[in-house]
Image (cartoon, rainbow, N blue to C red; front, side, top):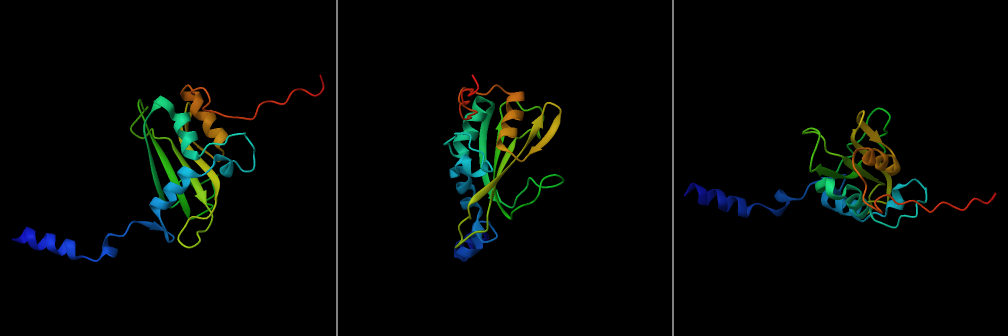
Length: 173
């Protein structure tokens, strides 16, 4: 009888009781989805690397077979601290669970920062942060290119995982 009363109370609770988590008025799931779909050029600080992929496509290609899974979450910015400004209140993270981690805490993370939201939707993506264990210890990065460098220092990158513009022919020769 007690179980029936508890179940009835749970089912009768207002929908707001079970509202999805939000950060600064934006649902965390919406932040995560926006990061997945963000073109990498939007977080490369104006550097044109000739890469037309989304953040999700780029990270999936880079992680390749080394990743057991990639979990996307939204919420407050987490890769902040000395040498890394906080920048924004709205972020999304992708946490890579490795097939063969060096330790239980060996989980590379990339984070996308968003400008202030409008009408409950994230503002434009504008910044990248990354954190992972480098060969010489834990490292945080402000640039996608630096994250790629640390990644390939530990794992082989699949062909096409790291994309840059073709080198211009030498005009002097």
